[in-house]
Image (cartoon, rainbow, N blue to C red; front, side):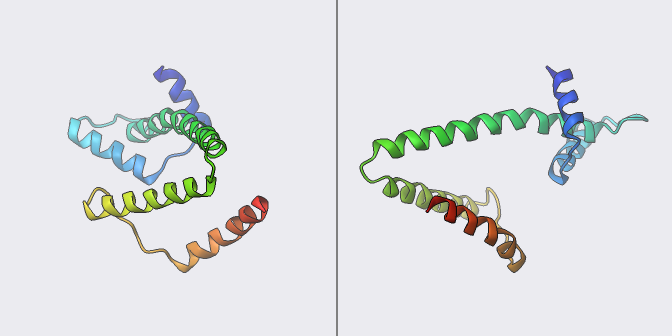
Length: 126
């Protein structure tokens, strides 16, 4: 279990600021300090990321397959996509209003970064 996740995390070799911060908070709450050698919070972060990666992959694939099934079953598949997108927007706005998470403003740099892949994706759909 955990040994496999550690090996997978080592192969991926990535930590995020969020994962490291979470591991640091856990260390402070538990009162344990990491000894010399391997950085314990960073290792926990890698294990956490390696554990979530397969779950996100499986859920993403399942969502794509379910959407394809639903779109094929609906008489007007674009109405299903419109409903899904509308609900996504409404749920995100509701969670921001409730303080569950926050959204930062969309920057010009982000717009430029997503413009080309979005245009190519739309082009592939046509």
